[in-house]
Image (cartoon, rainbow, N blue to C red):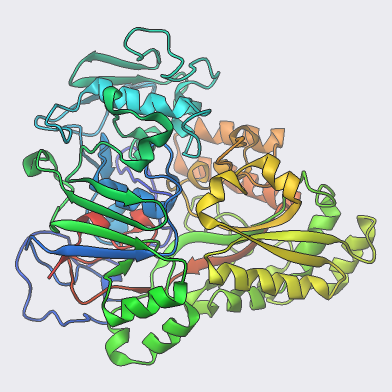
Length: 589
């Protein structure tokens, strides 16, 4: 999700922003379809530029997926694909440039007329809103709507699960209680945001944070109209200020978006809004989904987690199918994490025993091998983030094989020489994760660690593994998950995973519940640095402290093989969306 960031060149990110700098050779724009465009365009073509360029409107864009979003509420959603899809019905002050590859990571104005006017001390950000920005009922989007939407994130007892960066930056002492407990008449009592009129919004940061404007590009900074806020139910039918609005939604089954007639193209420089309708079908059968994609029943996988093993092999061996495949880097690290509240994983030596006993090559193969799974990862900081050192390998994971001798030494040191029992938690709708869990189960068994696998509902991630209480009650000693940077810095990738101040009662991502004062302090130190290189050095130090804590076993720096139908137009992969296709630019023939 990353490229170098400075005050002159600003980059943005999503649930994670892709770390690899994919080459781009064309920019997205209007125009008619080229005579040279072939039906499938060619293997990996969408990672190199725009394919099937067209400004033609109409038709139905058909998504399918095996997992619904954690929430379609902009303040609650944290899945990367939700951030990409949410641009159909949400807008932010600033967003990501609609261009291929690494060009997509630069920030561009959206609801605002320009990027922020930033004060010399880095504490004040001022924006002016565009003309013609409206809600689906035709009323104007105001600065107060934006403030209210951001304030909703403070209502963690009602609106939980989304990123909390803005809370921590704007209200580090936690003094504001959210709009539902706000005693001011207009429910706009957050002092750090000022709205002197309906078209001006000013943010006052207690301390400077070089990543602040990137935080405003997240869906969590989307406006919400107060009289349309249904609180915890808002994700069932968000009120749109984008080019599409909700027509119907049945969780875990289907969704239909239709055009928002009140949206004005001349007020929105980002969204192409080409299809007339956008449908999403959810299924629990991943193999069936892959087969239906290859048959042409659907256009693309909304989750973009890649074709399964059977379909991948079939598609790669057929030249016609292969021409519809792309192999982007996603910027995600796939890993196992060990909650320290679950015995005996509260003992660092027991955690080290798991790390040494695991088989890195087997785990890579379980995830699809080097092409479909990615490169073996040795630590928890992605290579393209400043401060990363891919060769830093304290547990010799790059050797690609288990270290049984060290695993047994660690078991003795933790008082469990004959091993112990634990439970691996894995999402039930991710066959690749189940295969990864089985690889771990097999390798751990060879040193006496008996690991049973518990498959939980992937749609309930925030309330299952995202709940420290549930994790402890269920005895989840190992959780298999993945993470990509929310924006391209050590803060954007690592802070939700390892900063103790980011541990949440629900929607938690610091599954290990690591709360180390020294690690937390390194984040504070890095955030004050204006020099990316200096900040990167601090994040490198932080990353080594995380490895020393032995709470993570990284598997791979992920790559996917994803499918695009021949019907799609304006197709390209975007670093700003984890190597997914830029959904807001897509059309259909």
